[in-house]
Amino acid sequence: MSHITETFNASILDKMKKFYQDNQLSPTPQGAIFRAKTEDATITAYRSGKVLFQGKNPDVEARIWQEFRGDSPAKVAKGRNSQENKDLSFLTGNHIGSDESGTGDYFGPVTSCAVYVQKDQMQQLKDMGIQDSKAIPDDKIKVLSKQLVQMGIPYSLMVLKNEKYNSLQKKGWSQGKMKAMLHHSTIDQLQRKLGFPAEAIVIDQFCLPAVYNNYLKSEDLKLHPHTHFLTKAETHSIAVAAASVIARASFLKEMDALSQDAGFNLLKGASQKVDQLAAKMIKAKGEASLNTFAKVHFANTNKAKKYL
Image (cartoon, rainbow, N blue to C red):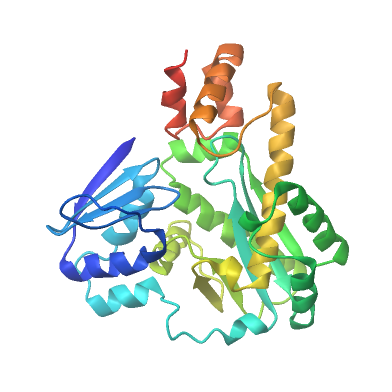
């Protein structure tokens, strides 16, 4: 497990505590203000100002706050793009929603989907049972995804396969940057398919908007107009919820295909059982084979070797 240690002033520590309020863990270690866990890292902030980021991708979380070190509290608050007191009326009108799947799974690719939903379709999607894919069983996800496609709901889907994921990671791309590029590309592709710019775009917020913008700038890209970042966007936007369903269904389809290629059923997630399965794959096919089936920079790769 890798880690990064940074020091921040009291103002930024306060903003961090609020930012991670939905991810906080208890109890906290002695001397800590809070402890929180995201898909990339566990963040522990101490009264001294020291913050420890540890996990499979600590740089993703650390970079968010490195961007704001020394900035005024007002700028930090603005960068967080808080939903408090924010006008969310765009959610009831025609808009694009974007989400991804597979980022926390050792085996399998990352899939990203953008969906365009019109105002008069929203109730129908809700009646179908469209909601955050994490709250829907996998077998139903597949059914709902087919129904969305059959309805003719405009969407764009991209799959970042493991070979490409691992190649980008070795070039220095964080998972956060990969996700930003996937969101941008699926939205771009969907708007070209529509033939017009969407009235609003909603992205499930996985990093501060300023960090997202920096990811785009590093590849000479610009944020699409009328883009909004919302935490837990699947619960606010039916378009994001629909995107999460299609992205998840695509991930499941890819996992089925990879399982067939591997010769045994690949497990989702990043548990100890996944470590053991990775060890089985190394024994059967060699360590190099993981490049095709897994995100090799995850800690599971090293953990698997303990079972050889």
